[in-house]
Image (cartoon, rainbow over all chains, first blue to last red; front, side):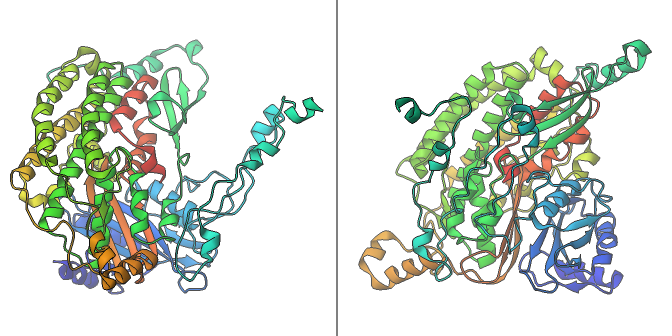
Length: 216
Length: 414
């Protein structure tokens, strides 16, 4: 059944290649054939539900660095799945893939998430903006070169500052969760410890005189 | 699920009223931020609404207030270390999430778990479904003004949590499954107590549903409100009760059985119109079916090991062996420090969770840490229809719509 589907698709799209897969039928497609292929799968093979759109980052310097992966599910053919993968075009910093929002309206948020976290630009998307991180956030956190501990960034609080006159101070990053991958990091540094909350005591609170000064 | 009631559609009514209003009554559009802390947005969803009077003309959901970067975290820890993070996805049904994650990794490792382990997982997943739906129904009732329902459903949920606590040691964050098994076998007499819960629960469930099913106020608020058509539900990738409420009978427990679901008999309830009332009816019926499944599992609960005995490099050996045998001690040390050794490959597994289809796409390059782990969360996909579904309905119907969608932001934002 799975080999059937792949060979049927290959007869129609000769540039497809079977993708190694342990579970569902899977194909590697050139980027420009993604939209016609998915349309064919939806209209002729009954894969009517786009369950997932995501990307894989194959580390900086890899070629191609990003691969987009689509998972389709058929509601009529008793839980049949198919996986379609395609290497992204564009540069390493700004990978590009075609949008499939014209086929499934639900691709909208999947592609926005993928753009937000991986930085893949989906061409033809009607409203490609961040969805989980805030607008104006400068990084794409799921990329392999983004550190787990995070990068300090300005908080988007101009409107709050303009209204209240108060400065918005971000809590310092605490270094991410405890990670014990042997050999890669110094385990002493990675040990969990009490969270350092002293930064919030040090800052003078607006409208309050610190107790110490009253004593003096 | 046909109803003989024929209520005027509030959205059509409002739109007609706006059309008929003379020019001097046409008002300017108002912008309203609903949430992120609003009782009916169930967590930290923010809806940026544009209103024309009481009619919503545009809705823009703003997500991310609960974004914790679970996928990034998963890439930086071993497979076993990530189990507690799955509790915190849909935190109303952690046992179902644990199971979905474990099965995904087991598929990657080509690991067969024994029948007893599968049975334990099915029982816990169905109990999680009942507890999640009880909360969902209670909160939905609360949203549309019937708050007695919540009192009844929380009491029943508490009984389930007692059973969860006895089994896993925690009420909420259960972390019960392991790759290749479960943390521990069911305690003595626990299965009997689950059976007793089912016996006393069914009559109470009927009573809870009776509070809503033919309740005039509830029907006024939900029948014909927030209609999601079959085509829209498919286009936006809705799953779970929300998809079935719109008339698509997709249930992966039936269509793509996992963990031995093919052995059990149950029905998949399907709605006809796709309104808030249908989604409510589907959830009510699903709880009855869950009880049916649990009873079938209990009736022939298999004996034998509750973890895969051949998973030597994946599943930690029993504690008494670790303390007495050198080889098991070394094996345990390797699993804890380097993680379970999973072969390279890709796997995508979806499980039918209470909120819909929860999927894990795992890319492994070998070793104890996933190279990429993508969580396909049902609440995220279900909510993506909001800009369309909220268009043109009354603001009070937005509350009913959100309640009937039954989403969890912990899973949506991940």
